[in-house]
Each structure stands twice: as C-alpha cells, then as structure tokens.
Amino acid sequence: MKIYNTLTKRKDDFKPIEEGKVRMYVCGPTVYNLIHIGNARPMIVFDTVRRYFEYKGYKVNYVSNFTDVDDKIIKAANEEGVDAKVISERYIEECKKDMKAMNVKPATTHPKATEEIDGMIAMIQTLIDKGYAYVAKDGTVYYKTRSFKEYGKLSHKNLDDLQGGMRSLLVSGEDQKDDPLDFVLWKPKKEGEPYWVSPWCDGRPGWHIECSVMSKKYLGEEIDIHAGGEDLVFPHHENEIAQSEAANGKQFSKYWMHNAFLNIDNKKMSKSLGNFFTVRDIIEKYDPMVLRFFMLQAHYRSQLNFSADLMEAAKNSLERIITCHKKNLDLLASKDSAASMTDAETATFAKVDEYVKKFEDAMEDDFNTADAISAVFELVKFINSNVSTDSSYAFVKALDDKLLTLTDVLGLDIEVKEEALDADIEALIQERTDAKKAKDFAKADAIRAKLLDMGIVLEDTREGVKWKRV
Ligand code: AMP
Ligand code: ZN
Image 1 (cartoon, rainbow, N blue to C red):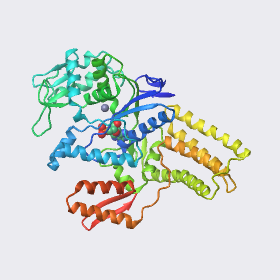
Image 2 (tube, rainbow, N blue to C red; image 1 turned 30 degrees about the horizontal axis):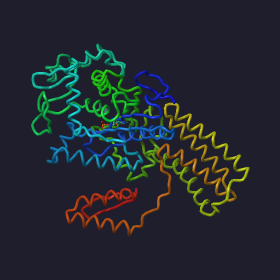
Image 3 (cartoon, rainbow, N blue to C red; image 1 turned 30 degrees about the vertical axis):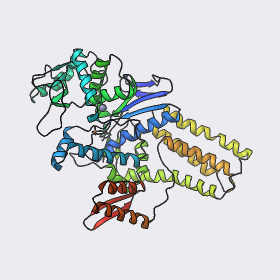
C-alpha cells in the first residue's frame, strides 16, 4: 500500500510500526460553531482510510481530538454570556450528530484539550528541562524553535526564509520572545477567560501542544499516521513535530497525510467571506450520503469545488448504485433462498474479482477513492447486465454482498431506509414540545437527536416546530 507522505514528498510503502495494527491521529475541529463542509472533508477522507485498513484486517486505533479551549470559543461564550464549556460541549454534541449522519465512525478516543491539561504541563516542563523552551517575564512559555535542528522538515521550509516572514510578529506585542520564530506553549490568563494553574503562571496552553500530548497518551510516542487538512502542515504540524520529537527523542509519526481544501464556486471557503455552508445546511437539502459521495469522488489531495451542480451530479451517480442494490433486494424477496448458483453463475461470479482488484489497487495507490468509485460503477454495470429474474438467489445475494462490501469501505450506506410515518414523527415532536415545557431539556434534545437519526430535521419557528426529511 502506498501513501503520499508530506514528510518525504513521495508515495511511501506503508509498513506499520506494529504488525497488523495502525495507530492514527487526525486533528479535529475547534468547537465554537456547527462544523462546515470544509471540516467534513478530513472527517470523511480519513474515516475512509481507516475503513480501508479495517477491511484489510488491520486493527486501527483512531484518535481525533476536539479543541475545546480557544479564542473563538471564548468569544462565542462571552457573546452569549455563558461559560466556554457550554459552547464547546454544545458543538461537540452537534458535531457528533453530523459525523453520525455522514457515517463517520466514532474515533476509538475523542480526547478534549481541557481534560488533558496535566499532560500538557508535564510535556512543557520536559521541554523546559531539556532546553527546548523558556519562560518569559510574564510567565509565557515559548518553544525555542531554532533549538530543534530539524524544524521545517515537514513543510520543507527553511528557517531563514521563515525568519523574514515572521519579522512582523516582533511589532505585534510579542517582543518578549528571544526569536520571532519561537511559538507559545503556555500563555497567561486574561480577564474573563478560563485558566489553569501551572508552575509558570495561571493561564492556558497554546494550540499546538494539545495534539502532541493527546497523541502520546492515547497512541504512544511513535505513531503510524498523523493527518489533517493541508492548512495544518505549517505551523501546526511542524510545531507538533518539534514538541514531540524534542520531548520524546523519537520520530513522532512515520506518515503525514493532508487533504486539500474544499472551495466554493472556485473560491476559498471562509467564514469571513460568508461563502461557507455548514454540514447541517447541506444535509437538510441532500441525503448525507450524497455529501460523502461528493467528497470521495475526488482524490483527497486534489482541491475540490463545491457547487449545487456538482452535488446534483453526485446525487444522480449515487442513485445508480442505490437503484442497483434496490433491484437486487426486490429480486431476492421474490426468490427461494435455498437456491444455489448454477455452474454458469459460478463462472460469471468469479469475474467479480477483477472489479474488487481494481477497487483495491485504487485504494492502495494513496487512497484514490475517485478510481475506487469507478470500479464500483463497473461492478454495478456488471450486476445490471448479469442479473435477471432467472438468476438464482445465491447468485444475486453474492453479487449484492460484494457491492455492499465495497460501498461499506467507502462508508456509503446504501441500505434502503424505511420512511418514518408522518404520524410517528408528529407524536415525537409533541413529546419534545411537552418535555421543553416541563424544562426537561435533556429529553427534548434526545428526541431531536432521535429524529435526526430518522432523517428528520426540526426547525423551531415562531409559528411552532417545522420539520422536513433530509
Ligand atoms: P479547524 O476547526 O479550523 O481547526 O479545522 C478542522 C479540520 O478541518 C482541519 O483538519 C482543517 O485543516 C480542516 N479544514 C478546515 N477548512 C477546510 C476546507 N475548506 N477544506 C478542507 N479541510 C478544511
Ligand atoms: Zn493537531
């Protein structure tokens, strides 16, 4: 299996540190808002990577964090007049709902930064003791970037070029740094912000230290794969390497994978330009599997453009796969399940291996899901032209199982969902309204989540609750 490694700038053969196991860490979202479809790209891409490893028999330990302390969270909390934790917990729950809708498996562990502060303080202390970090007058702890000789090896940047680009930092109040390249490990508290006690000052961690600490705690000092969006290569991942390798004296991660960005109408998607969609916006209009299919149609290292036309195309393509599966199910329902394959069918079925091989070859070439999907379409075509009302149960079932196996590796759930009856939905909505009146918000939220699982999205309006199917 080949994986494009940002560290080596080539496709490297994958060799796990431990036979049959994969230890992988994916940088997760900062939780101050509903996640947008850009955030969904790494979630879907790396969930698919995990699923492929599992399909090949690896046991995957998959860790993905939630950054739950950050300026944006604190700002949102101050605007609402609530504790930062209220904001982060709310959006962690919402994020998990979106992940579930997109069929992204829960990580083996989803650590939260605020629950790992002790580990961060310990690693920062190790860095100070080893001479990689220093404490400034006000208690800020900085990483001494130039002390880590390999700094720049991931982003392939040269320290002296960086020095030029960073000069501006010297005039932005960070004049207590020894060197403009140094970055923050721990910073003093500000009025109205959450803080923790540390040997240096009451304060909170810089952003980068959390991933070094959580990765070590849940996966060990050396891991197989570290992943995230391409914007994280520098400085986030570069700084993680500097911290972890200096503290542990070992290579942090063997393979570094980065997805390219998702753009909208060929422009960079950003909150400030206002041209972003939340996952929730999209799954109100489309089945979440259409969004997943759309993401996987492109190679993860290619920029991907989001537009209504492309989503319609994705919807139609996915429909072809679902129709094939539905047809198989209808045929199976009308057949005697004891009927085995004829010799001719056995011979025909053997040809399926060719499509499975194409699928695997594509996935083993740096997870080329675009080509893997083409192989699925070839299988669909093969099924459509070889299955008929005369086919045996065993033949149709075996072909359909292959289709389900491959779509499952891609995390595309093509099972035909039974539509909930309007009356059942309205009864649940009434139950939720009653729970809210009784101030039982936990129950009300649980009912909302249950409805979302059933594909129903609620909107609280002045005229009452409105609902629609996604
Ligand atoms: P953040 O919450 O900004 O830390 O982002 C969480 C993850 O989403 C990181 O891996 C980012 O690189 C990734 N990400 C953010 N925006 C986009 C985008 N437009 N396209 C692809 N990935 C993105
Ligand atoms: Zn990270």
